[in-house]
Length: 193
Image (cartoon, rainbow, N blue to C red):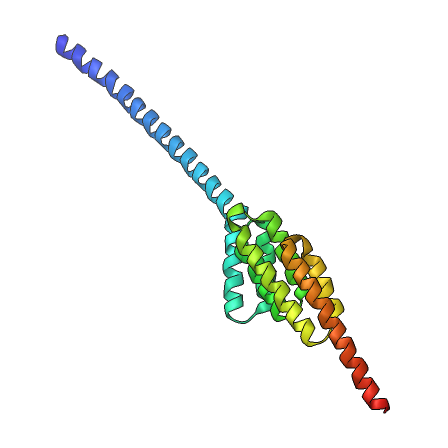
C-alpha cells in the first residue's frame, strides 16, 4: 500500500504544480502587459510633449531656412516658441528673417520678447542681436534720410541700450537730421535762383 499511496500522492501533486506554473505564467503576462502599457504611455507623453514638438519644429524651421523657404521657416520658428519660449536660436532666426525683409521693428520686438523669456546665460546673445538689428535698421533708414524712422527705432530700444549709447545715438541723429534739412534747404534754394 505504500507504493500505491505514493502514486496517489504524486498524482495529486502534479495538478498542484501545474496550477502553480499557470499562475506564474499569468502573473508574468500581467507584469509584461503593465510594463508595455507604461512604456507606451511614456512614449505618447514624450512624442506629444512640448519639448519634442518644439525641437521638431526647430528642425523643420532649420530645413526650410536652409532651403530658402523663409515664410515656412518663420512659421515653424514661431510654433517652436509657442511650445518653448526659451529657444534663443528661434528668436535670433526670426529676427534674421525680419531683417532680410526690411521689417526692423518686428525684428526688434521679437528680440525684446526673447530678452524676457530666455535663460540668463543666453540673454547676451539676444542683446547682441537686438543691438545689431537696431544698427541695421538705423543704417538703412539713414540712407533713406528717414530720420523719424531712426528716432522711432531708437526709442524702441531705449531700455535695451546703455545710457551713453542712447544719448550718443540721439545726438548724432539730431545733427544728421539738421544737416540733411540744411542740405535740402540749400538744394531748393539753388533751384529758385
